[in-house]
Amino acid sequence: MMKSFLKLALRYWLYNQLFFVLCVIITACAGIFILTALNGFYNYLTATFGSDCGFYVSIILFYGAIMLALFNSYKLFKFYWRQTLANYSGSFAALACAAFLPSALGALCFALLFYLHNGSITALLGSISFYLLLLAHGSLAIIAFTLLSHPDYIILIYALTNLIPLAFFARYVYKLRGVKLPLFKPAACTLVILAICGCLINYTIENGITVRSHNFAYENGLSSVNLSKYKITNPNNILPKLNEPSTLLLTQDEWLTLDGAEAAYPVYSAYANACYDGIQKYQYNENTLNWEEQDKIDTEFKKYVAFNNTVYAFEDLIYKRCDVFFGAMPSQKQNEEADALGETLIFTPIANEAFVFFVSSSNPVASLTTQQVRDIYSGKIKNWQPLGGEDRRILAFQRPEGSGSQTLLQHIMAGTPIMEPLKTEYIGAMEGIGTAVASYNGDAGALGFSFKFFLTGMLGRKDAPVKILAIDGVYPTDENIRSGKYPFTTKLYAITLKSNTKPQLVPFLRWIESPQGQELAEKVGYVRLY
Image (cartoon, rainbow, N blue to C red; front, side):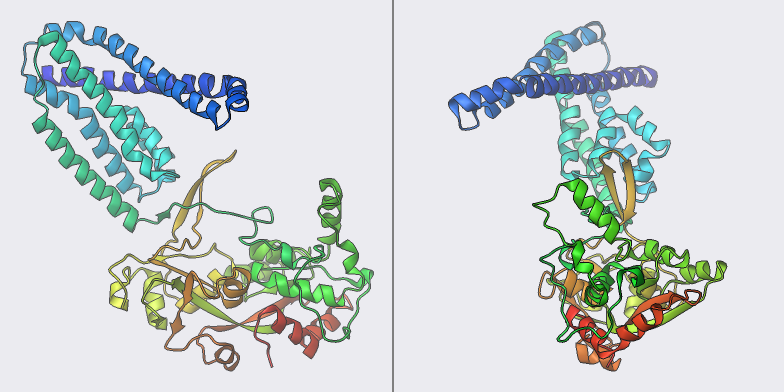
């Protein structure tokens, strides 16, 4: 009895798989031919009749072709079932159960593997488990890819690839045997299984480390904000000016190579703009130069004022590809890399800064203690409710290892292990599937951290949509930062190598500490040292 049932279930599974493959082929062919090959015809219709006529005709033809293909696939699979159903002598209830088995087992397989891979589609697709999904049901492979960008499509894909062949099958049974399948009980059981799977998937997403979002990047992927308004090459830049001529002017053969963190770029760009004599000659109008000429100027300019972000800029410093690195205190690993090369780092403070934590403006929490921050980022506290917020999971975002802000977080944690960071999964145009440390996404349960100037100045989030939190009851005002009352006050540094003996380096560092250097740092948006 069981053997015949399994044989029947296997036959239905094969039918379901073949139906899915055929649908994919039909949809691809219809899309390529009707939506692409006939594009000239649609443009002609739109030009002749207007009102996007060609577009609507293309949609009608596309879905018409799909319906015609489904009609013919119905007849094709009727031949597939004819002999089996004509000679069937078993229970029709068992027949109905066999028809629901692939969808139920496929959902269980996907939910279990999704859970075991901690909600990471990247890990799932990169493992042998992916082939189990293909065996369970071909549509699950598409669902796995779709979850990366459109999780709302999962129900639609799974329903269409299971309900349509099921409806066809019920029709075959009625036409060939004159029996209406008893679908209610197996359908109810399958819905219960799907509900359990949905809860498991939702639990995994809520408690996993994967966050799906769309990311935007500038500066060849090195910057999360557009730095063009801070670039000397831009004639319309917003760099602050001194109230009087600079007391230090370096000729081009004395110019130092400056590089640093994203949050530091505006200030070291302002320094170069003030004391690099003649550097404005690199300014150009994007509308009057072709890209080759612009690229040539940018390449020459970046020999003096570069931007490679914290990790790569620090690497350039210790390998003597730049003279001054601007940013926060380096991480332990970065210090060890400098020691391994026999280099001694010199730290010159240039401004006061605050390391701040922020939440969505809709979050009722306004303050955290230092211990609560440690408990959140160690994974001990996972919900906002015990902190005075709503019953909502805390999405505690981090930054990539080696970045200035992540290094500050490690310092604040005071040796307490930090939980694994949330991940963003993406599909690149050519690079395929991958992961990256997730960026703050504005979710109501999100918690992010940054340097105050970067958040309120460069990102322009002074008022909304985020709210900076007080720490230990102290809000990071300029006065609290300058006095050190705010507990997470830090310094912005100009870091150099002791082995760098260029004669203009020390005068440049002294000028940064001078009233003029402090004036520019304050005008950019930092808190001056004195």
